[in-house]
Length: 443
Image (cartoon, rainbow, N blue to C red; front, side, top):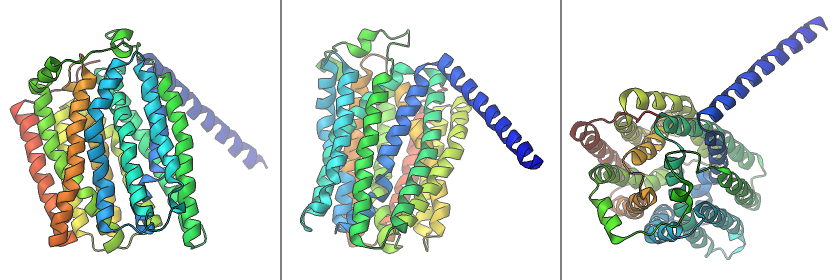
């Protein structure tokens, strides 16, 4: 009895201590920048909404009757949609008075499409795969615009090391949540009765839940205070901005922006090339089911969580460009590990490397983009950048699909690995050797 009381008292003390430390951290972050906590919560809700379904989406498409070509279209069509509509969408966003409110509408539309996807299994069998691909592709219109707007807001909300801290914390806790969400969704599907109807019902519930979580995204995005940073006036973010042809020409003559954009585009071509072929190899060649996809995603998320702070320290000490090169190299090595994977168990090691590289790319690419874009017309620069990245997403998987059809899956993966090593060398040359490594600007 006494031992129970003592152990209970110790537990309460430890919880109280952790609670005090957490509250102290929250107060510190709010003093640093009061948007950080809201930004992290918004990011957690975004990660939840996306990762309830995304790690299992290709397997879902296969269960709907999707072919290799439709899996490739699932990966590339959103890129074509994003490239076609992103700039017109951003030009519209620049002309409206209240950009944050309109961005909230785009976020809502994107999540509403997920609710529509929940009804895809009710369609005739032959229409299900293409309906799913088309809805996912259509979702990239509001998604691309809202994410570009979020990237621009990030530049206005945070500066210098505060920005690196915000991105690091958002990605660190986001990956921990992704780990939990993915594991739970995979376990739910693995433990339900093994019937196609039961599995489809689970997927429908996942998509409907993603829509509900998306409503929380809209709420917390609306709570961000863009006028906080004294360097930027409220009119800069909320007022109407008229983009001229001369502004677009000026963007293409901005050496820092063009240099960063070209070398990262070359990397993105190799990065996007591997998406579809990797999914095909893991699901169709190695035979991964939902629980294995969950294990792979959880392992990747765990390594991302553990290495998020380390990437932030590398950025602060060595500069963003060194960190970016290291992240690109990690993803190239990750592809080699995938090529060498003889079975699903080896993929656990490969997914650890993948998680380290992905979190590094997430932090360094966005941070590098904001470092290399001017304060004026930042949303235009981000729109141009993301348009070319979406074109890469559209064309790259199709090229690898063609190559795979005439060779093999392993040959296609090997080509992706070679492309990633070559593009990493280009990133290193352009950002570090030629333009010199620029450290993060002091807050």
